[in-house]
Figure 1 (spheres, rainbow, N blue to C red):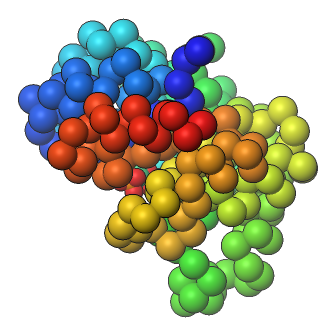
Figure 2 (cartoon, rainbow, N blue to C red):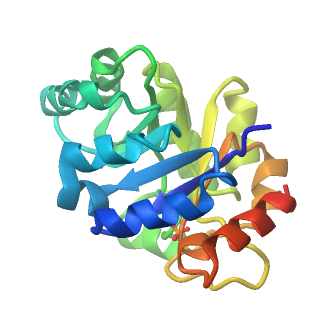
Length: 224
Ligand SMILES: O=c1ccn([C@@H]2O[C@H](COP(=O)(O)O)[C@@H](O)[C@H]2O)c(=O)[nH]1
């Protein structure tokens, strides 16, 4: 069975990224490349990472006016990402245009509330309601804009799935029991995220910063 773990490769170094994926490739279902990697390595880097033959998740969290985001999505076509992120806060028209501009085989998913934020952060930025309300509101907007799914924490995914049963739910901020949370404020364990309805789990540091990334990935996989 294909693993539902996407390993988050957060490094600007292509050689380091290749080294990690070489170690964990048999225990993960895909490779997530984010801003750090993309800004440093661009299209060339993504094309190099595609050579592992695993699906590529481009986590660029696009957020701009509709025309600009649609043009950016168009410019990514040749990379054929399996998954691409935009920010739901960009609004309905932006999400509609992003989806329309994406290739047929690319799932476009909307980031609702970053897993590094909590209630205090919502209050600070002037958002009303709690994380559940925020995720629910943006999940409905993403669904109505025709996207494929959302990014949310494992704490909200069960609720979000109730209002969008066929949605694709990406859950980052996942931590095995006892692992350091770092900057993640709404972390759950891989098992909890899966049981709550996650479609895929995004896991970075617990794997990539382990002394033996392959062992770490295998141990997490064994809990699922
Ligand atoms: O809400 C979000 C959206 C994206 N991410 C990304 O997932 C990984 C998580 O890495 P860890 O090392 O497992 O914390 C990272 O690339 C983030 O950019 C997220 O954490 N939360």
